[in-house]
Image (cartoon, rainbow, N blue to C red):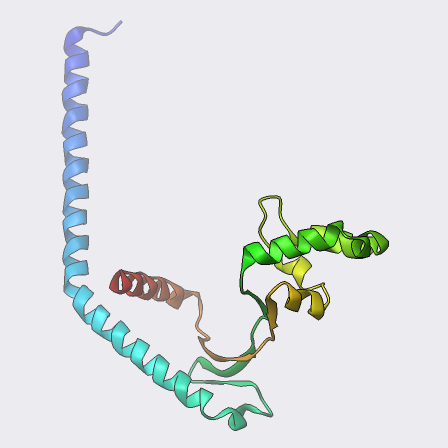
Length: 184
């Protein structure tokens, strides 16, 4: 069994080691904050300039679609530019009205005579009464129109994407953080 004196000595040793670790952590944190303070404004300026140049490049590409007719995209200096096929989307004018219409349709003789349509309608509406895109895209266009829903076709969206390796992903994360702080 240990003596009270040996426990006191161990406690004093532990406390000293703990203080040293906390001091080291404090020093590290202070250096991190100093580095952040040193680079924060230049990084914000660089990201702002990069954002402006990205927008200008996007507008130039958008104004020159003929250059990307044979090849939708190309990589220049590690940046992939051009067009990519966007995703089609559903644009709902009034979700509550669309849900009411589809629920009404599912209870009519039309839906009862066409069991497949009734099941399609049921697949379009979640229990919490919101529209389900996957189910909605399977419906006839006239039903979507009557419900006040418009299918917006896929478009060719401007593509500007760095083709960097994993080492630059950390920099991209820093840039995203700075951009989100600028927007806040």
